Amino acid sequence: MEIIDAVFLGIIQGLTEFLPVSSSGHLEIGKALLGSQSIPEESLMITVVLHFATALSTIVVFRKDVAEIFRGLFSFRWNDETKFSLKIVLSMIPAVFVGLMFEEELESLFGGNLTFVGFMLLITSVLLWLADRAKNTGKPVTYKDSIIIGVAQAIAILPGISRSGATISTSVLLGNDKTRAARFSFLMVVPLILGKIAKDLLSGDLTNTTIAPIPLLAGFIAAFIAGFAACTWMIALVRKSKLTYFAIYCFIVGTIAIGYQYFYT
Image (cartoon, rainbow, N blue to C red; front, top):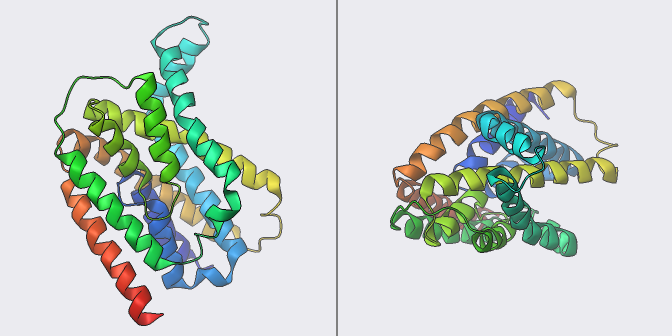
């Protein structure tokens, strides 16, 4: 893999992990356009590295929140931080269950099927359009909400369904405050990303990769910088109800992906 390809994929991953346009869907489109499906080991390795970069950018953006959560947890009291952490754990359960029980079925969807990705992007577009029209409130995320949001996150494993778009939209449609919805959405994915990376590393699937370290480092840096910027920007966009622009974008990209698969492959 060339450095320019790694940087290109890193920027795509960094932006689309937080912007509600589906990072997995865009990575599938990007890899299809670059022809990376012919080197699946490199594809898996670069995906792992880029996801780690965006997880790290989330931790940096929310470093104060993360520090408060850890301080609260290690005080060993039933406080706000402990309650928030429990909600994060509850939100993870559906995605972990789906990921473990349907791993092979899910992997079969990540094979460059742009028609499927396109239709999932159209669904993301509808979710964003609905969420942008919901009223902002001061309502926090409840335990019940965290489970429902977790189900949305599990569905967003599908390439083309935006994880941030699905979880933020679901949270907002449940009546939660938009800023809190964005914060919860971004923090709830960090343990899952780190868990998935650990699983891939322990599985041994990456031991035979031949990708050079320089492209990996270039992709990592690109994904981290783009992720940091996108995460910060997204919080402001959700608060100001600007998701309609992304709904239009997802509709356009989804339509193009379907058309490309139909007419050019």
